[in-house]
Image (cartoon, rainbow, N blue to C red; front, side):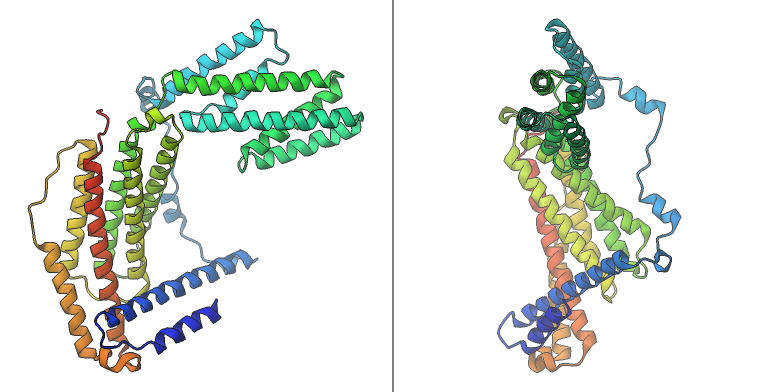
Length: 441
């Protein structure tokens, strides 16, 4: 990495800004990109040092008081319990759905006198989830895994008639099944089936019947789980994704405000800044997960899917740009934040407020047409030109030795670009949200 960084640095130094319009801006952009890569390499080195350092006493850790603020504590309150005793609660609907489907599965197993009918109940409990998409996905994986496992088990049982081999294979299969359950559920289901069959082969001679009923019970349980989620009080993402979008917009606005405050005060990065960044990324992740679940639902329930996709992409792009600006401010010496910077940030935050108001139908104030952003843009452009003229960088090229002026040009160029981009993204978010017909509360 050091070798490649040096090559990049040498190439940038060779490329002197010319008198062509935009040449200096391009040169400054290259320097900003180099600085970003340099910081990334430093982070990789730190991670490598932590992973390779056996003596943890030498490592510096965050204070326990600050660390506790990053942990989401579970609140045990009777009010939370009472709030969930309502059909408006997805947890309550899932509980009713699960109880009813389990009773139906038990009734089918008892009526048809299926061998090991409790496998139906276990399959339902393991597969069924509050949302349709994940339940459908796990149902398919469970059925495919069981069929593959049953096929392998049948072949092994027909070829080998040795209980010692069955015991060894049963133990190995169970170990593999539990190790794969979080990584690949289909593979885990395959080895669970193998382990169950081999363990039963030690107890009962009719192994082929065990395989047959294992497959039948699994198909019945998975089918009931998927059908129950589609029919019994279904929770479609379309009716809840607006709240997830609103939470992400609020988290982005909080992160935006934290960056603005830090740019004004400088110094050590406060814990509030880190918490705001954490909440913003978690909210963005929750939004992406909600959209993914929506994409797995039936076509008839994927209302405005393309429009929601645009909002998710814009939100993620906004957060990435915000993080980029925050990282630059943290890792570089910066000048005093101007009123123009604060005005720009205020306009962006106001756009996020408007977008959230459109979703939640809360009262919000449409901004009066102002020239704040235009004036701020003109100020930054003029400042860039003034620094450039005073330093003479465009004439002297990379031979210039005034590091302070170079750093100021880099700061103005990056901050200006990010502010313009963030403002444009916030306006696009408003436009996309306006055309979505959100469900009424």
